[in-house]
Length: 428
Ligand SMILES: Cc1cc2nc3c(=O)[nH]c(=O)nc-3n(C[C@H](O)[C@H](O)[C@H](O)COP(=O)(O)OP(=O)(O)OC[C@H]3O[C@@H](n4cnc5c(N)ncnc54)[C@H](O)[C@@H]3O)c2cc1C
Image (cartoon, rainbow, N blue to C red):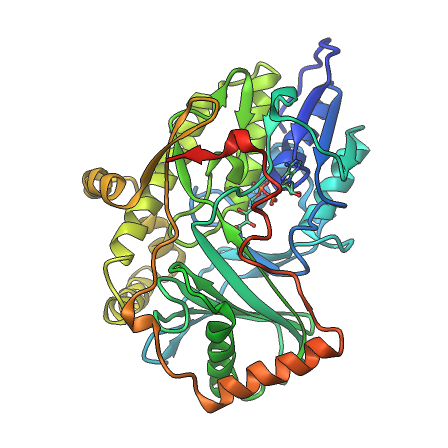
């Protein structure tokens, strides 16, 4: 267990944002003897999300993330999580195979403000350590030590439907450029609640068209999936490489620092890890800038390269990736080895990064003078326009009826744009 040194410094540490990165930082700081005040613009931690399931990945470091959390003194049993060793992999031609690992490949957690969510679990741990959290509270970045305010701009969006089902616990990950332009879709079922989500890495004027067609696909391929829709959810991701992560004694953590996985959007682990590293720097135990640059940045850069390559291809290459993954799994007896390999910062990726950085990322400067390279939301392609199926149209109409009866949508492409302070904005 990590030994925390008590600090006599009586000045409170002020954090903007009580999401994953801000709460993680606050727990470590409070354990280290610092007074911590967090301001969050929303009414509660997790309120940016609305009961959607997210996957906590276990392939970027070779260490089980829950072991890391325990090492840092954060007890993961404080929130509900469901382990997966196996999932269905849906290829673009609808073949379904099963990558598998003897290790925990990932865990599904829920986001939102219900008691069992990861957001509320971390909030309880923070409060237990004496952290003061002020919700519906605005604060200027100049008054903060840690900026943990989540995404500012949009590099990609995800849009999903939550429903009741009697289907057993399950995850399908689908590579399909038509249903999820430039990205993937997924089905997650945990204890009678399901989520079908499509990720759009190319900007579309009507995200629900893609979701309705994706739901149609899952209905056809999983006929036992008895779906009673509850609500539609979603959000955006902000992917950027910053020249520095600490400026004028301010720490940029989580997605406020652009720390996101450019390839798949698995940002939770980066958010929590960066919050912890910032706290350790404040406690005088390590150097944030160099820790980010040695531990997280190489992973981020490999994801930039992977994203750059995937942007150039379509379903034919997705099929090759899926086949290669299964071949790899057969050889190693562990499907996770393939995922780990994707994050290897070797000579090939270092070489491609030069071109990916120039060709894909857009240069900008933050108002506090740091240069960043952000992944812009790509334009739609010609192939993104297609006629919806009859069943997808029906699914859309069914949803309209559910909305009339009170079905909620907690997603709009601009839902976070006005909440993040101007000093984080990039001027291109
Ligand atoms: C639909 C969707 C699905 C996703 N799926 C996955 C997944 O499966 N796996 C994964 O690892 N990642 C996933 N992600 C990404 C992951 O959710 C984020 O990377 C992670 O939450 C980032 O943590 P954070 O601390 O930076 O931001 P958040 O957890 O969003 O916290 C930011 C906090 O700052 C607050 N805030 C915002 N503006 C201000 C302000 N001006 N002042 C004060 N407070 C402010 C917000 O209210 C919020 O509480 C997904 C994201 C989306 C949108």
